[in-house]
Image (cartoon, rainbow, N blue to C red; front, side, top):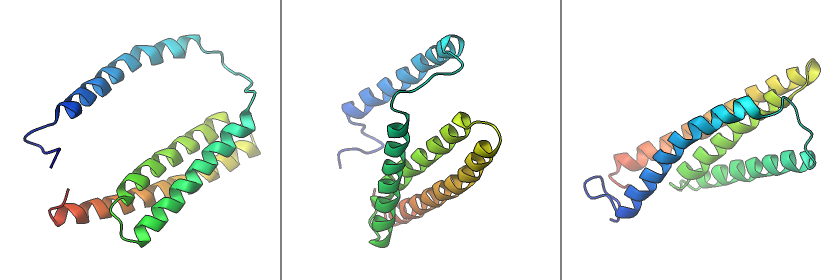
Length: 137
C-alpha cells in the first residue's frame, strides 16, 4: 500500500507541510481582511453565486445518497465534502441575510442545512467505521 502510518510517502509529507504553512499564513491574512474589507459590497453576479452553490450541494447530496444506497465506501468523501458545503452555505445565508423575514428564513434554512450536514457526516462516519472494522483502509 502506498500510504501507511509507518512509512509516509514523501508526497504526503510535502502536502502536509504545505497545508500546515498555509494555515499559519492564513491567520495574519484573515486579520488583514478583517481590518480592510468594506462593510458591504454589491456583487455583479450575485444570482450565479447562489445558483452555483446550490447546484453543487444538490450534486453532493445526490452522489452521497447514491453511493450510500450502493454501500460504496467512497460515500465517506462525498458525505464529508457535501456536509462542508452545507455548513458553508448556511453560514453565508445567515451572514448575507437582511433583517426581519429574510433573516428568519435564513435561520430556518440553516436548521435544515445543518440537519442535512449532520446526516451526511453520520453516513460518512458509519461507512468509515465499517471499513476500518474490516481492516481495509
